[in-house]
Image 1 (spheres, rainbow, N blue to C red):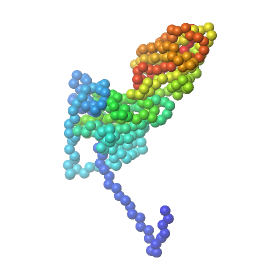
Image 2 (image 1 turned 30 degrees about the vertical axis):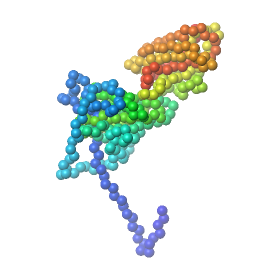
Image 3 (image 1 turned 90 degrees about the vertical axis):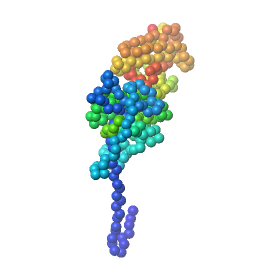
Image 4 (image 1 turned 45 degrees about the vertical axis):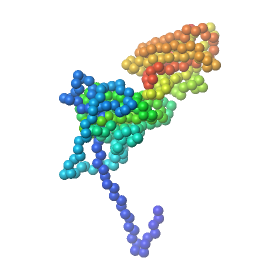
Length: 334
């Protein structure tokens, strides 16, 4: 903006001052451990928010938050809630204690917050970046070495509960877990509350599942598959979403009457897959299917049908919703 000098040649600018706020920084909603552990060695955690599907530790009740510091103690100044304290860091913005006030965060953020006492936990909303690849939302919760059992609750965009993950004890920091997610989908994450305020740092990162065949989620985008050649793939949709299907197109040559599918687990053996392979004709009519359970090693199964030579579609799906197993698919002719 251009300003014309006055006759006195003086230009006065006003400065605006803003008051800083004090922000409590706390950890996930979890119950403290007595004597550094939990009774009987089991993890103790606070109640799951309404709608959560409980798959982990038990419940606990919350106690009132510690009272505010005496007036004689001058609180240290802190950045404005929700503002970035440093590059990549976001401060918790109260109130964020239910779905309607959930704080929006992004993949790659490092969140510093606090929760405890009579609040219901800290609610965060995150949308996975758009793209062709589903993957894992990796979460890391560090409660500054406090001896608390960490817990994270997961919800779908419609606020229906997915599950929660809880640490086995409070002696290991940071607590790490992950959620199978779909690109473009929105989820709610709840850092569970403690009986008292405890500082926490909450990190979010996204790791796509490596599937070079994607997108091949329909007949029109089916990947060409050569007989006898192993093709890497992953049927992976994300937590609570419709199961992903991978479509492959293969040609049965003259003189052959059967097709056989072989699966090789290329992920960890602790994550078995349960695959189903459907066989379709070129006109997209279903011929038959085979189901293979617990693919922890190399397994194969033949389509027990007398087939005419020509083009076919092999459609692979994972019957474990939300599972993400990297595998190889090999189709051979007999």
